[in-house]
Image 1 (tube, helix red, strand yellow):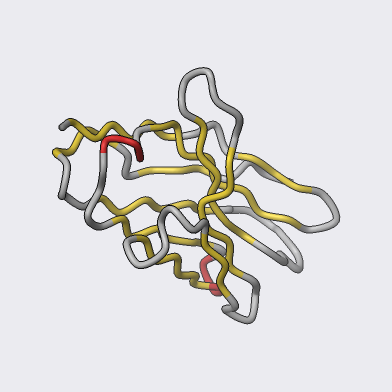
Image 2 (cartoon, rainbow, N blue to C red; image 1 turned 45 degrees about the horizontal axis):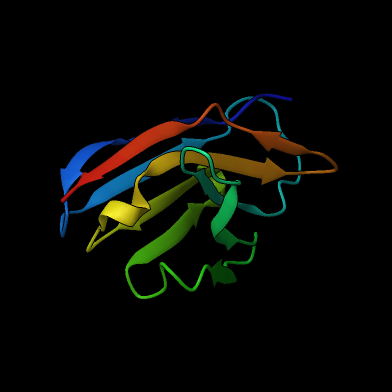
Length: 114
């Protein structure tokens, strides 16, 4: 099965917004959870948000109210709308999807300047 591909990262000023996308293309059966983790330099990889096939969402406390995860099952694609960005949101954002295995993308850099 294929690696998901992230897009939409970049440089933004504090208070700004970015929208990340993650697509799992190819012949993939029965994707269960999809979501986003992030890893800042020297830090562990931490959960940002997840979404089930049925649309149930879960967020890290630090992003609740600012980030919104959504999913298009027909396209095997998820999105992460990030608003009111803070410098501490700076990290490489990794997408994943799970079947009987978990598949990780290569990551997309998000940098928030103060």
